[in-house]
Length: 567
View 1 (cartoon, rainbow, N blue to C red):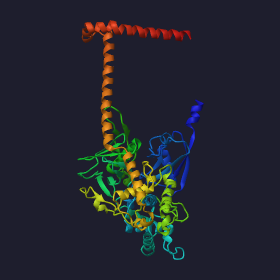
View 2 (view 1 turned 60 degrees about the vertical axis):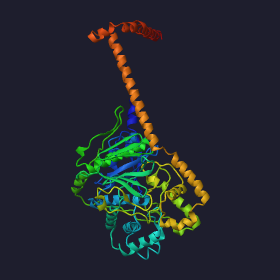
View 3 (view 1 turned 180 degrees about the horizontal axis):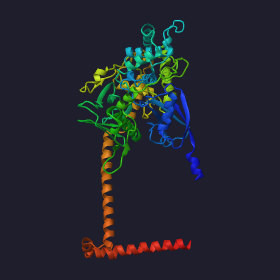
View 4 (view 1 turned 180 degrees about the vertical axis):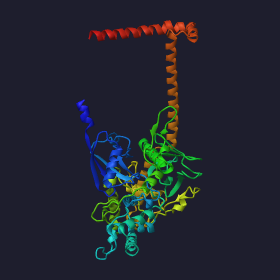
């Protein structure tokens, strides 16, 4: 009992990495729930509008999860202490500018700044320059010729890759258009601009469609989206208040297969692993409940099960968006002090880091520098325990849709970029197989994707030779063919379902037969059993099989009992 008590009272060290890259360390008991740790963190941040945020961790299999607040922290992590987690935005506000407190807007600003750098938030050159200029204004203030020499914006990296032209545009906007804006005003303008982009709030899950083509699935404040290549091939709204023709009605998964039910169609996608598919399903259930329902009392436990086997059951445990907004309107306190992390070039910041421009490096070295920059992202605090990074430039290519386009329920397919959507693998919720940067670039050439302006400038120095292209092409096709074929997986699932049905049927018949024999051999005086006992077949079975078997069991039991008595 004393050992058990000491085990229960054992304390574990937890480190939570915050959005500004600082760390919060605390100790928790073994049976502490996720809500306890989250409340400690929000108290440390002086945060009241906390329902938009969550704690993310990575399990030993490199799969990301959101910490469930109703369950034990230690049991969820399944790893050895000390525990390391990240504080991130879980539910993006539909209108971030409408948040009540400045501290909440600042934290959302930090999250979207990370999204911009890692490739989750995409935009064309003019929007990218404006967003980067807002970041500069918010973190270094007004342009000062004495402090900011020519080319000062090149010392900071807002995106994985950008050109000198984009850097000059950022500096020009910062000098001429944003002077006098306070950090709070710049952050607010940044949020308003980011919210108009098509990929705002996207946390991409890599999957494959039924034809084996790569796709990214995501849940946003406005609905479910599928990004494939350079297009948004599906956009299905949550539609809590309006009667939409396309509305998410049900989410389900089985193994690695994810199903999304609309009123007229069923979308089917295949995740890399069953754990990734379950994570995708749980994210969908939570987002649907948060954005669609009117009140938390309407939340129901959702099951992803079939006829014969019990599936996963999950229930969203927090408040919904409408309740959060109503609660925020009642906040009445003095605005808390915000300790903003100033931009210092030598600091390692995930969204603005000091690093060389590709265009300022000799052409013979640009390719190596690009790989080193991408590999450097792997060590970012937001991406611990994840796979190496592959990311493409989004400096001049992406064409956002304004929010009014989201209101068109008939618009299913929309071009979101000139090249394929490709966020950094290190920040994806699902681990992705590691391939070299050359294979990724070659696959885009094989598929006919256009290169960005920066890549066109580098084509002379970095394009592989014909022999290299042929060799890499063969390797790429072999890798693509090595992935599981969705058609074969569907056939295998059908065969497994049939075998499952046969096994269950045979098991039930066997149990019924045993029950019938036991009842018939008993002294139960029922007309049905009396009639069976009087048949010649039963008498033959009774004397030739049942009685010898009963005597054999009795003999064995007596021998075991006597052996136990002797010992």
